[in-house]
Image 1 (cartoon, one colour):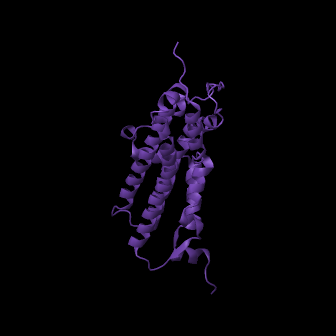
Image 2 (cartoon, helix red, strand yellow):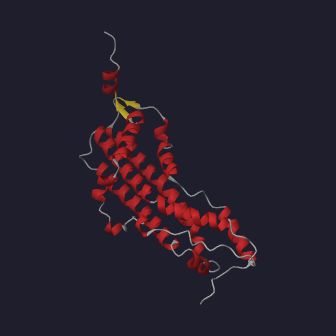
Image 3 (cartoon, one colour):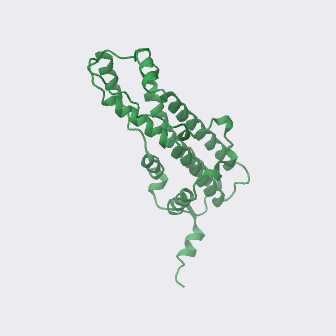
Length: 241
């Protein structure tokens, strides 16, 4: 029987230092807060009057791009920080004890690619000539962010697994003469890996995967913080005769 790979004390100490410096692995609140923290969601609804529609559309295109960057950045940080597992001093150790980690990181990479594909698709729709009303811009923005948020939610079991790996590594004893408990309880269930490869993802059908509650939440945000036509406000708050 092959002996389990181990590390000398100095290597383990250095590895733990790097794990301690890692960012907090994002959870559900991290992604919802990323949406809520977008600059346009920090301001009251903007009443527009005599504004060029090109400016309106540019505003919504910028919102969509920024939402994609905020969500993608959280996943990309995890991927970047966990590239440590592929370094020569670590690769045998991680392959033996955490053989699902490569799969987890591959799933996160697929997710970042899907975010780009979704954003690109909805940006193209918003730039078409038939996207010529405020309502159409709002509709596309809500559905685009809803799709991207759904991808992020599908990453949660994978991120939870990655966080368990991180916590396990932080708990390891620096002294290689001490027997560290094997992480047999840290596994990634295959049914939790639901991020498809971009080639198998039909972006045109992505909106149908979004939870209705997510859409309602995003629509409420848009109502409170998005652009509003001057006439809409006049109807809600008519001037006294």
